[in-house]
Image 1: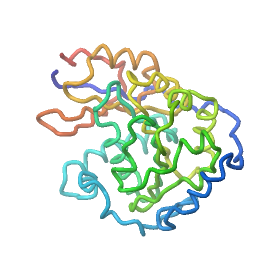
Image 2 (image 1 turned 90 degrees about the vertical axis):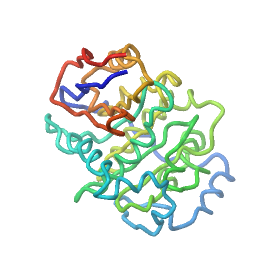
Image 3 (image 1 turned 180 degrees about the horizontal axis):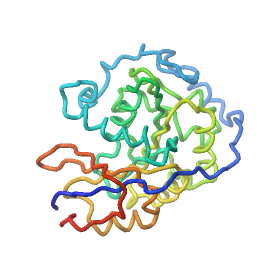
Image 4 (image 1 turned 60 degrees about the horizontal axis):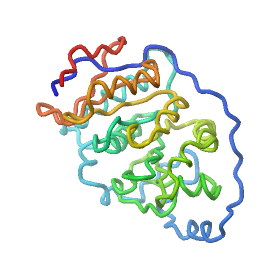
Length: 289
């Protein structure tokens, strides 16, 4: 597979479909609520705009620290990915962004985590990450956080979102983990409650950009549905992984205007390169296999 010379970028203004937010409901399982009450206070972020860094970066995966080091190539790379999000040509700032891939092991979780760090490092920006990969969650592990409660508890047991948000150790960046793997991940993500959650987060935390780390499209067809309910999509393509036809099919399905950018990961000459060119009609002419 050769180098991709052009990337997908949003070609029209974004818009969120309105869905009535689901109000918080008392938990159905008392033991679930009791478990949440035992979470360390220093890891819980239940106030919009909280910026505490009591939970140290010492627990981070060492690869994430590259995004905080100005001498690292990752530092500038993810700022290039951040720029068209914060300053879109349309003038409409995307509030909800899905980070996904076509196939497994393409690095979408790593990209989501680093993009969250980059967004939170902005002067006026807050970011909230949500791990929607219920089969193979990665965000909590990357930030050294427990994954004992999260999205699954909200969708299954109606646990209030404010009890599930965790501080990451990076000021202005918080995370809702996936929670323990459920028996029915597809049904949870493909539910009306999940769609309502996307809109609820955007309305409830208006000071934050919401990043959703979703499962690969080939593994979870519900990713296509989620993509249609967010403002934009960041697509991660790993060198030697997804084929051109697979990428094109996914983009055709969600619509090229949904794609904010494409990250070409692990190219031999450049470990991580984010291609965010001017708007285009997603030409794959130089994407060789």
